[in-house]
Image (tube, rainbow, N blue to C red; front, top):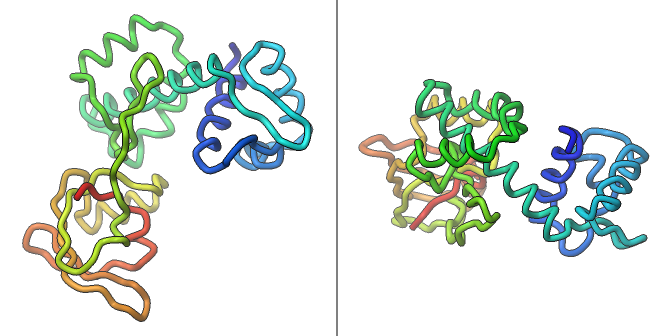
Length: 216
């Protein structure tokens, strides 16, 4: 498979989390930052390979084989992110772009040994679950920080927004995965929150709270 084909499968896989049923050509084009005509050509190629089912007016869906290939690309990406962060001292806002390149390495033996070397991690540095080699992902019962009430406690386990600017903001505030957090107060006017991490208390906006996953 070409890098472009793999990137399309991964994009359709991710879009499947937000679309109920087929995914439109325009949605894929927006995700891939390309023209709808280019998407149509690629969907045709992937359909011929048995990786995508396309129905006119209903959109595209991955076949079981397509899902497995996409999940394994994501597995490689997230394992490389863990490796870069834990073993090469990259920051969590740097690992994504490098992992985008490393995810296309074909060697299954390398990835299996990387998984074992890292101790079979379940989450990447942003808290996203890592699929196993069969494409299975553990059930996720995490909730967004914004849904917590006053005096609720939890542990930060992930972020919804993994952009570099957001991750740098979290670093500046001392907000990181594994930190214990408690909601001290909520402002009804704008849904901002006063939170406590260790002994420090500070206020975060609704936008920030809506992008942090918590395990209660």
